[in-house]
Image 1 (cartoon, one colour):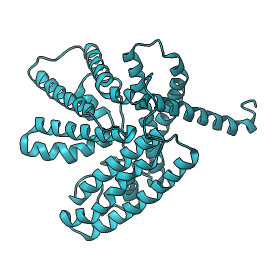
Image 2 (tube, rainbow, N blue to C red):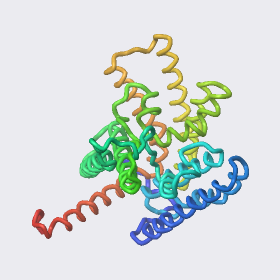
Image 3 (tube, one colour):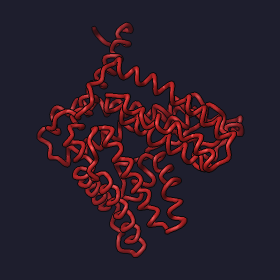
Image 4 (cartoon, helix red, strand yellow):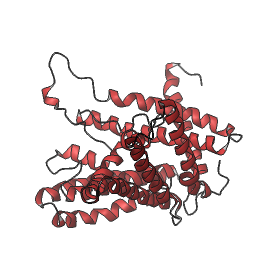
Length: 359
């Protein structure tokens, strides 16, 4: 693991401080979502609606700063500073997943959480002879799987000092995927139960891809992909073409990750996140050109190995490097281990009265 000191400028999280920040976020996010729906129903798209929604943006920018836990700071950055603001800007332009005609509860949940209702489904038209499966079923399994595998990672990390850097960073990639999938699937699980609607999964199989286009376009964090497509790719593509649209989406993603770096370390970004995403955008365009010209058609196993190697090397050198130097990886691992210990101790405490575990 990284040998750098703990992340500068951030106090150690306490239960009291994080619960207080969570309470504020839980109060403010729905309140501003209700306001956004009220304002957008009364104002036409464009500058009038954007001007009405703009006062909410500084609050969503500030919310991650209320957390000292790096995990909560990361997810607040993603939920509030990235997604909520992006959705509200698109709402001001009459685009994106939010629309004033949405009922209040779906609007509030979609504004504050990374969820997306599955298109092409009308819950009022299900066949009476074969009722659909409960929508929560799609998300319970990934939640349980992620908890189990994250617990295994937490148990393995103390014994990884002998691993080469790339192998250790591959474990980091797995941890990031499992953590994101756990949180996003949990949010979707609760939302599906409340809405009674089926929601789309945000991840497919990002650790088993044979092309960069497949990874970034169809496997990884699909809510962010949809918003980048609406806010960057499609407007630029309409004017300057497909390749320019791809570069615009990766440029925007790189800038958002530079902001994430600042939130996580409180250190001024040095452009490595931006270079990482621009590099991947360029290689994705080159991959598509090579396929169209018949120059890139390797067997699936070879393509998987080449793409995985490219991902691991570039992520290790360009993406994780700034965080490792800031000591963020150490603190994230410590927080993850503490959380897994808390989860399992809580489970044991709940099962002890039944006699399933000994005291």
